[in-house]
Structures are given as C-alpha cells and as structure tokens.
Image (cartoon, rainbow, N blue to C red; front, side, top):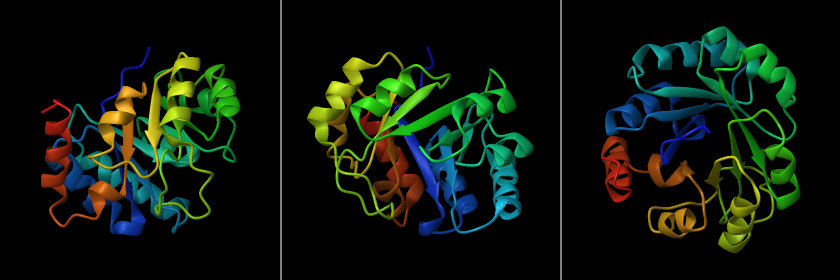
Length: 204
C-alpha cells in the first residue's frame, strides 16, 4: 500500500506563482506537492511543472492536478484526477505502474468506486467549507469522512477547509494525509508555516 506524507501541500496558482510557492513549500519541508493551475493552458503548465521538478528535493514527489498529458511529458511523479478528468485506467496506462495517481471523491459511493480503481490514494472532501474551489461539492463533515475512511482499503487524503487546528480530528477520523491550500498559502512566510504544520504532526 502507498504511504503518503501526512502533509499534502498544494501549490495553487490562485495564491501566486506555483513555482515560487513550491520552492517555499519544499524549503519548509513539504515532500509531496501538487501543482494546481487552472488559469493557463497545457504549455504554460508544462513549463511550470518542469521548473518545479528542477528545484524539487531528491526525496520529494511532484503531482500535477488534472492533466495526465502534462504529468507524462514533464516527468512528474504522478497526477491527481477529478471526477470529470481522464478516466483512471487510461491514465494508468499512460503514466505507468510507478506513477502516483490520486482520485477525487465527494461521497461514500464515489469513494467505494474509487477503491476498486487502479489509484494509489482517494481524496475525500470537502470535509469543511472551503473557499479554494469554485462551486464546491456539499460539505461532508468529519463523521462522514470517518465512515469513508473505514469503508475503503486505500489511503485517504482529506481535503477542504482543513486548518492546523482541525487536522487532529481529521487524522483521528482515519485520513492518512491532509491536503492543504489556504492554511498554508495565505501566510507570508510560507516556509515557516509549512514547518509549523510538520512539527505539529511530529514529522519534523
């Protein structure tokens, strides 16, 4: 089974340059970073991914949001797919067995379906209200997150409105990792905030 770092950091372009964000996340100790930029085309995203891979520590993994083609061409470590993206099976064929593939789910039925797919982890959310996504799915809450975590066999990455203060109950619900955007990226000293997250989880 795939073992993920407890912190899954997302370098989201709505907070600034994903390359610079990734640099600071790495500097703070993050070792799993997703590049998320829905504002540019494939060419621009590919350039960003290649830049991030050049600055990534040797033990870090870089994941591309949505775009299997960019992940493949850029040599990223994997891709994160949503419900409306390329299906998982062809994504796995393109990226190979060693790629890290995650899949977004928003309820128990979707999570159970994802558990049967060739994915490495199942993202579940939003756990709490979130402002990082336009037209978010209905909030699940910790109780429903716990139900999902105990119903599936693959690692669960919880996402959506997760703060440092809420992380403890999210892990207690059974999530292996937490995907964080706002509670990292809204801070001026992003590297320091990342270190604080990792220290609070006993991983640094």
